[in-house]
Image 1 (cartoon, rainbow, N blue to C red):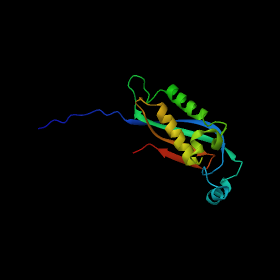
Image 2: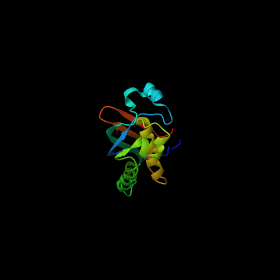
Image 3: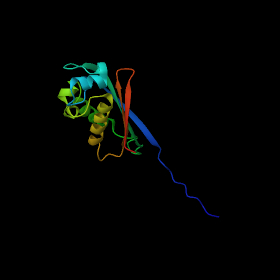
Image 4: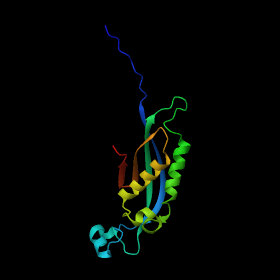
Length: 149
């Protein structure tokens, strides 16, 4: 009779860390005429102005629990990555102050993408995987930006 070998698998755990920031923006396609932006975005486009939000950014990390440290990833490292990314957008007018949004409309979707890319870039070489970021634009709107499949 054949004996089966048992393989002990470490469970994949999801760790979520959240930070807050405030920023202003106007929904606008860079290079488009005001009439075009108004037709696409309606009141979310404000020529020469904008509006602000209090954002909540959640970063979802996945990985096995390190048997030595007991963590998926070091929280101090995660906090550092998040602080670095948030510093680029906090208390900024995104359309003008952040290079990425000079070529991409500062929609919630693109802000989430910007944050995802920023966190992923900073965590290169770590064992954890960035599964997604979730960006809340106020209390009742959010966007999930998932990792590439």
